[in-house]
Structure formats: structure tokens, C-alpha cells
Image (cartoon, helix red, strand yellow):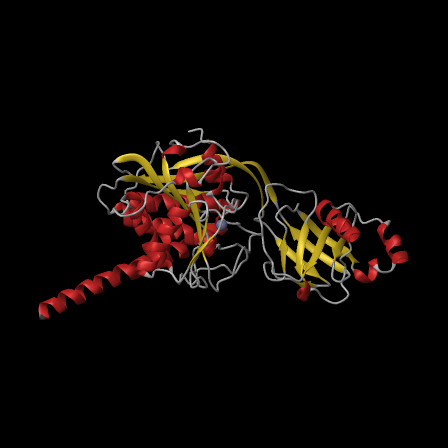
Length: 445
Ligand SMILES: [Zn+2]
């Protein structure tokens, strides 16, 4: 009896150890991916490049195979980057990048001191004043535009033309926002800088502005997807996907860490790679795809589906993980209602094991790297976690803040799901993917 208890406690101890080892490893990966060294995993200062080398090193450690001579699949992108100055002051009040303001990612470089002209409700509601204003010369001025209290359709059109196309030909445009600052990278560069400024950071009666912005545009920047696998007995694959790129830098002093988006996905894939590399002789290949260019418009996964390394028809199922760092309220499964039988399997596994508090279903959505695979006929899910954590595309999406509340549960769910796909339970009803799913584009491969 005593030896049984010793055995039991040893067993529990080893399970808990492996539990905390998974989290420890995920934390280690996140801390590295989000460190200053990786410059927000963008294209300035070699951020994405360094990240790809790190992921390759981790995959090699687990002895994962490459399909070709290399783990890398290179492709070219257009991108506007910021690795120089990012200074802004209004009426001599120095503003803090990432907190008080963002430089819109399509901005041109600019440096100097300029007088500031304000467009707001007070001006628009004084037609005579506005008429005079609109015909003045803005070529050495900066326009600050605040739409508070203005919502007529005609003004909306003018607002778009001023902020998107700079029709008043000012040196730069500053637009005031009352919302959270959210950064989105750009494939294009415009001929003027656009700055997004928090309303609470704007000094009273703004009259002058000092700007120093350096941007650099690349029309053919080489970046890469990373693809590795564990060989199975059958030439068919289960694919796990995540994107390793993020938003990069906004000047030399600011980078976007992207812990949840999608450091969490990369940490998940590396954790799964570690797990599956220890399994002997799996039935299907277990493939790991780490995409670049996602934040610029899912460019890496699009390129992959146009140039697949093995036929897309050989993918049994693809699971894309993007923003999986919380989970205290469960997960959402995009394509869940398209592949309903597979979704029910996930729910069944979860009901039995209580890995996650909820599994929510969603239809198709073009919101991450699964999408072009799906459009080309690959059965796929995109999973993201739900919870209190809300930091998104800002400087606060850091590993210290990211809870990883249900990381362990999600890993278990995905491992069991892989097992169910591989060895369907004897009493399970036959999965009929073809019946429930008609791809928009017919499979070519
Ligand atoms: Zn993402």
C-alpha cells in the first residue's frame, strides 16, 4: 500500500513537472520573441530575420525535418519601416510615442518646426471663417484635425480626403482620436506623414509643432516562412500554423512586442513540436508552419498556398493559432460551423477533460493565416482564446502582462484532437467533410 502511494505521488509529481515545464518553455520563448533584440519582429533592424533564425534553432533542437534543403521559404514584400527618430512636440510639450501618439505606418519622413492649423467643429460651424481657411496655403504648415461633434456625411468625405490624401497639401496631418491607439503596418508609403494623437495628450490652443520622423520604404524586402515536420507513416499531414511576424518598430525607441499576437501562437507551436517530436512513428506527418507577413495582409500564408511545398490536398487538417495567450473565457473556433463534425469532436474532448471553460463556434472569416488554405479547399480551424486580456497592436502587449491562463489546457486539447483525427474512436460516426464543405476555389493540388 505504501509503495502504491509513493508510486502515485511520483506519478503526480512528474505530471505536474511536465505541466510547469510546458508553461516555463512557453514563457521562455515569449520572453525571447518579445525582447528588444527582436525589434517587434518586423522588417526594420532585422527583427523578423532574427526571429526566423531563433525559431529554426529551436526546431533543430527537436530534430524536426525540413522538406527541402532549408527550413525557409523566401518571398518578397513591400513595406514601409521606421527605425530612426520619432519625435513630436506640440507647443513645446514633448509627446510620448506609443502612449500619446502613433505615426501612421504609411508615413513619409519629415523633420522641422511648423505652425499648426486646426480644423474642428468651431471652424466648420463658422462658414465664413472656414471658407477663408480652406483657400490658404498650407505648404509649410501642419494641419491638426479633430472631428469631435462633427458627423455630417459631407464632412466625412472631406475628412477622408484630408487625412488619406492630404488634398490641402500640408506638410503633415495630425488627427485627434478619443479611441485606443492601434497600430497597423503598411505595404505602401504616402507622400506625407500622418500622426494619430490622443485627445487627452493635446495641449490647449495648439499653435506650433516640431516633428522628426524617419521612414524607410522597401519595394522588395526578402522575408521567409519557416516550415518543419515530423515524419509520419502515411504521406498525409496534420498542420499547425502561426505567424511569427509582428508590427516591428515605430522609430528607434519604440517596438511592438506582440506577446499575444502572435508570440503565443509561436510558443504553442514550439511546445507542440517538442511534444510530438518525442512520439514514435506517428501515422501522419505533423507539420509546423510559421508565417511571415501576416500583419501586412496574410502575405506569407498566401504565398505558401500559391507555392505549396507539398500538395495542399495532402493536408488532412490545418489548425492555425493566433492570439492564444489568455483562455479564461475559453476559445473561439473559426470555421467551426463549416467543419461541424470536427468541431463536435473538439467539444467532446473538452467535455470529457475540462481543459477549457468554453468552446465557441464561428463561421468562416478572412482574419488570419488559415484563410487562403481554406479558400483552396484545405479543411482548417483558426483558434483564438477569449478572456480579460485585451492588449492588441499596441506597446502593452507584453509577456509580463500576458496571462497564458489556459495554455496548458489548450495544448492538451490540441494533442487529443490530433489523436482523434489520427485514430478516430471506434464508435465515432464517420466524419464527412466533403458533404459539409464546398470550397470557394477548387483544389488544384
Ligand atoms: Zn496575429
